[in-house]
Length: 416
Image 1 (cartoon, helix red, strand yellow):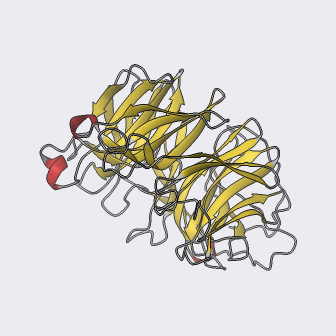
Image 2 (cartoon, helix red, strand yellow; image 1 turned 180 degrees about the vertical axis):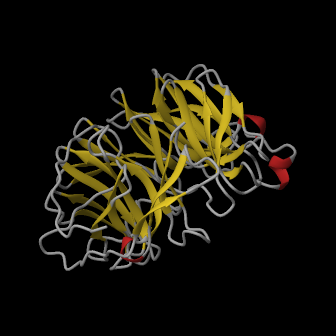
């Protein structure tokens, strides 16, 4: 397989979240790497599941979710959080037939460890974070990548700023709404221990839209430590892993003007805690909570199996659709749900053919769940960050994290 050293592709604004950024820019000194290779790896469900591409070397490792610039097209784009020529993560593409191309290796000049990007008006915008945040150090960046591939830093987060690093110790999200970028930030320290919501109107008009309130008590009525954000129907919706009346996390909405409302406080126990995502589907919000439901195997093996829930965008009608059971069933969801053919699909970190294997599951809007694929013990589903599964023409595409067979991770396809 050959790897192209140039970068020519059209960017199409879709309004959906996208998982990466970047082509090779004219001033880049990056040399393409041909070590990573296409792999057609048989599996017990070979007609359904296939390893398309293994990462490593200059392609980096620890892949995040996949996305498309052109919905329904043959190219999927992805980020790795670590590795690459400059050791700070990479941006690459993989075709639906398994051919890969490397565009960018992130360095300290642009910010390292990219985590998510969104398309907006012909450009890609994204966030990076670092692990040495504090005392004025660089904590992360907001960046833009034009078709030329040259990374442009639009805002730098420093350790002494009120918002600190955008990640805030938990996964975060970036969303585009009406030509403006919105993101979640937080420091875990005063003056904003519960985090905040910021906006950036390109190119560099940065503002803090809302500061999540901290009352100083264990049961904080507002959301705290937000970890996901989506734009839907003129509003912003998200989840927080803590805060709320039971200190077990919340679902919240925020207007672009900064008016925030807690739509639901998770009670813990069998009705979930620590929500990780929401997805808009058929006029409702559907989401996942990683914690709660701690009976039986869920208690001793996973510290909770998690739930699937739905709620109206007004905050009414919350319903626990399904409680994961662990064991042969799925357990501990950590990504978002994806709609395909009227159902919702997701991945879990644990459960399946072994306690810690991981699964792909399907659930109907009414709550009928089924594990449709169990990863082998040597695979492990991607558990942290990313956007879950990406549908293309009836097939779902995703990534697996590093494991003993694919030491830097891999890209796979699954046809239900």
